[in-house]
Length: 166
Image: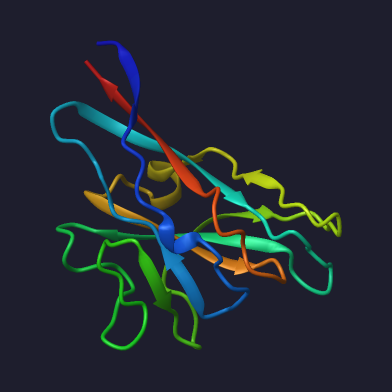
């Protein structure tokens, strides 16, 4: 059997546009579904964000990335009836003040800039299987902006490479 890779359709991330700096106001991409026709062993993801035109080092300058998973696309890990209303769609979400129930995938450091121009940032390549301990049927990536200013209105994406054996 040979190990093969293929890029799959990127999820919608329009909710990342102009994402405000907040602990509780976050944005979820559309659900990513693990393929069933190949012997899929992992998804490798890389998040691209366009930062604010000005980042000041008054606190954290990170965008934190979290994963929420689902077996069937209906019931999501960490979701409840008042906050963390994960449903697999590209949308804004409110996290509870008690903390985020997502699995932390990593953070993107937004470097301090006062240049007045937005900079494009890329996350490390993240193995979903390694981060979650398994490869779920469906998952979403949630961004929590702690950069000190709203993200740019455009320039956000998630690249996904599927690893499988044939």
